[in-house]
Image 1 (tube, helix red, strand yellow):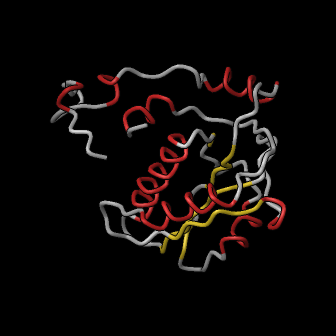
Image 2: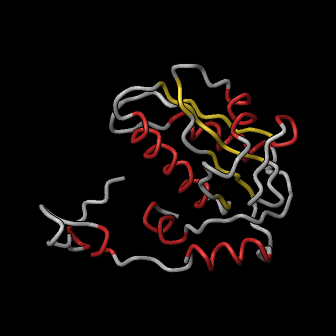
Length: 178
């Protein structure tokens, strides 16, 4: 699956089947995360974390056994660098057939920060569970998706602009070299 296909296929998953990813897939994710760069050339440290080993959880997630998290030293553009690299990892996971969802406010932040060993000069903006989606969404996930209108996507021309916000960027001129 190429990058554009992964972008189109990507959906947030909050209900997982509870199976382990296995050493080969965990290694693939760790290797890919370790190779990621960003346009700001700011180092991002990723870790693939076992939920049981570190006591990781979120009240909006069911069945997740693995999370991916990252930290970055506080500096100008740290959050943008994090977001760029983290989304690349999320899209790579999608290309491997795995489910993910960005989480920030609905996690046990102290537990995740301990697992990531976040220092005083570092920030961990978000985490994601990563695994195989359950065959059926939970009632909680279905309700959240309805409330958040997660099944709708904005049109390309409503998101991307050229020169100013009154000139939509034509899709074929997007230069999507992500």
